[in-house]
Every structure is written in structure tokens, then in C-alpha cells.
Length: 232
Image 1 (cartoon, rainbow, N blue to C red):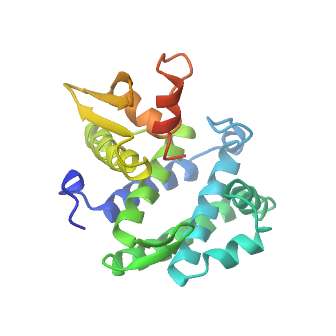
Image 2: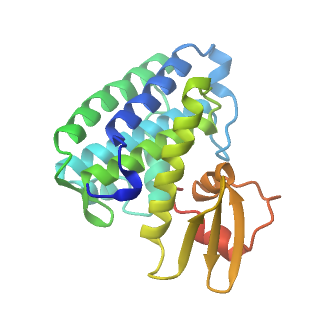
Image 3: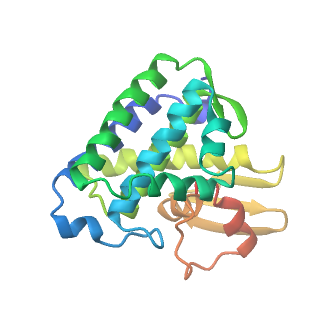
């Protein structure tokens, strides 16, 4: 938990805040609102919430040391296969029941994660610090909240961008090959270098790039775009 770039941030609080916003949004949706498209190709809002519930299945399996068992239950394929399986498992649930099931999983998992903050948990890459995994889970909720057009209160916009930006830099560094990618803050933007290539992205675009959501019309070197997309 000694991570200077993340000092002063509580990932469990961040997870909880994103969950509250998602729950309030979905609870107020009219029936046709559940079928509205999202930024995730092929997923409407209902499928997106089913995916978020499937993420909670993965988290619960990680806390129990049963990630590989879950992957085998889903057919033993890739994470994409696991995602598709998790959505399909909830295909027949009424909207209200899907929201309630997701909410119950969130409550149980979030409490367990917080209680084990200094421990490790099972993941697809092996044992991983719970505290750091909580940042990935908070980011997952934030990304998909944006995908579904969950509104962000004005009072949260600045802080939300700050923590997502700070963790995005950490995630890029963690997932890159040693010395391959560097990110330097520069007056409301991030300067990204990859070997001989470089680009400068405003903070919001950097977060979008790391989330795999940078619009195609933003002109950056393809190799940098690929290297940044680590929270997808």
C-alpha cells in the first residue's frame, strides 16, 4: 500500500461511490432505457449491467481462490469468453432482479475486499494485492458507468478525473515492459513516450486512452494507442 502516486486515495471508497451512482441510475431507468445502446459494441445497458455482475463473480472467485474453477465453468477460454458467459448466465433475469443480484454481490464483495485490504487474492495472473486490485475494480465500474452514460455530479467531476488519472499512470507503468513506456505530467496533459515515438494527451484523453475508449479520430501513433489501452 506504499504507492506514492496513489497516496491519499481509498480504492474501497472509490468503488463504493461508483457503485452508488450506477445503482441510482439503473434504479430510475424506464423499461426502454435498459435497451439503450452503450459504448460497448453489442451490449445495451442491460447487458452491460449483467457484465458488471459477472465482474463480481470473478471478484468473489478471487476472494475464494477459485478463479481457475470459474474459468473452467465458463468453458475454459479467454477473458472475453468469460465475459460472454457471465452475461448469458443472466439473460432471462427481469431487470429489477438483475439490479438486485448485482447490488447484493457488490455489497458482499466490497465488504470482503475492505476487510482483507492488506492481503492478496487470486486473479488470472496469480496472487495479487487486494488493495491494488480494488483500484482496477473501481476503474472497471467507472469505465462502464461512462459506457452506459451514467451522469457524474458536478461535485465529483474533478476528483473523479484526478483518481482515474493517477491510477491510469500506475496501470500503464505496471503493464508495460520495463523501460518501454514513460508518462510525464505536463500542465493538464500527459506526455507519453514509447521508444522513439511521443505524443501529448490532455488528461481526459489520457484516461480515455488507458480505458481503451480514445476516439479513433484522435491522432496518436498506433503503437502508443495500443500500449496505453491496459484497462480494457
